[in-house]
Length: 300
Image (cartoon, rainbow, N blue to C red; front, side, top):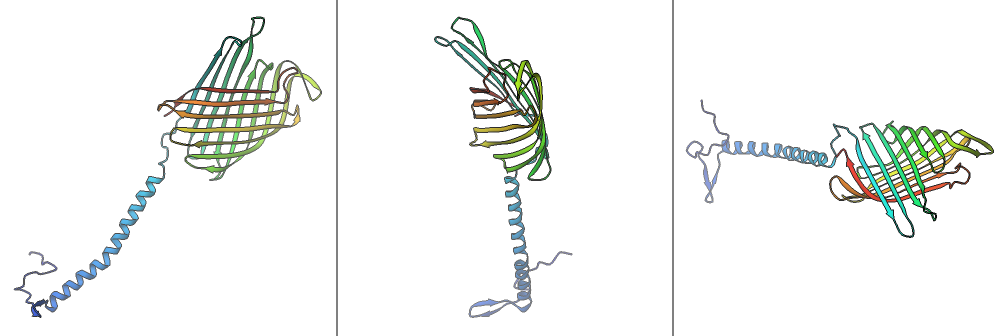
């Protein structure tokens, strides 16, 4: 049996009367039309609200970055070199490494530098002006949206200051002051242990020897900024004030500005500054390097 339409438009089955030249629908036809209108008034607002909700969901999905389902090491490896001749004859080479592995609740980072320099003195002999390397790893684990715990291990060596090896171990708590897709700023504090071994006898706090240890604090801050689509800036400042033992007085500052040239290469301008309040006698306590070089992007 054929289904009967809701509205029967056949005037022979539902006769209409005329008033003032206009057709007046029969009571049965008027009732059907009222039901259709009532259904439309009931369902159209709900459909409109559902459409608006769907649009808002799509917009929110577009604003929120999808989670990284394939965590991998990302960062950069850089090379800077400089050479002068004439009144001053010198060569300088700086290698830098900055890698990190980010997951939803933790981050592992590795930072390292190698700085080598040679100069020619008035007698024509070449002297070592810089011979230093350092390598540091840190693990951060988020305790909640704002706080995180960290552990840190670092090594450094400097032939110019007669430092054979310094080992730095630290652990503590940190706070995410700013945590966004383009800007981050963290502060952290904890306990540290420093083990320093020298090539020559060194006097620190009225004690002379080649091996010194110290227990102290680690106070640090670091930030990263995506200034534009092609320009980024990063910096980190950390201090190791000693409390016991040799009472190390160490200060570290690293900063770099990177301008992307291609998807894989960027131009970098940076500063590496290291202060050692317990440097060997006759050696400068501050060692700074300003560099310009090219970085290779790692991990896409």
